[in-house]
Structure formats: structure tokens, C-alpha cells
Length: 83
Image 1: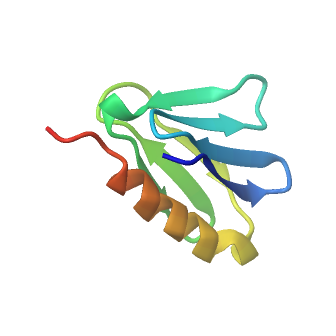
Image 2: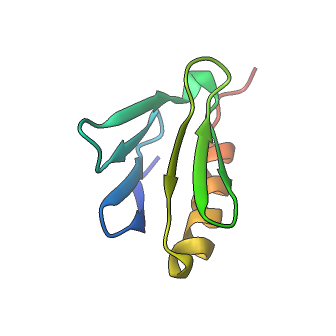
Image 3: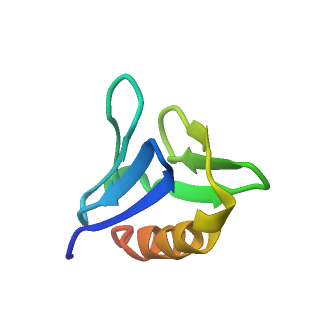
């Protein structure tokens, strides 16, 4: 898979390389291996990443990035490994 990235806000970048979802912009990068099937959900103000196992992560996003985040969420789900 070709690497993909999307900005949630001016300080939060999400990247996907086909194996790992990474979130940059915090004290350290947050990593979610696709084997744990992380899902990106968007509410009115927050993005939440929920893996099947392990802690979730939530952060604010800018409204102008909503469509790009939704497209990234679909790409992320399509990249989940088969069961």
C-alpha cells in the first residue's frame, strides 16, 4: 500500500502505511497496528480511534478536514487484514 496521510488540525497528522496507523502531534507518536483493527470515528468535534484491543485515542479536528478524515477512515477500514 502506498502511504497516505491526512491532517486533522494544524498540529495533528494521521498516516497509514498499510501496516500501522500513526498519529503525530502529541508528546509522542501514537501507533495502532492494523492487526488490532483500529476504526476512526468522527463526531461533531472529535475524532476517536478505537482498536479492538488497547486504549482509544480522541482529539479535536477542524471542520474543513471532515471529508478528508471520512475518506481516510474508509481507507483505514479497507486496509484491515482478513480474518
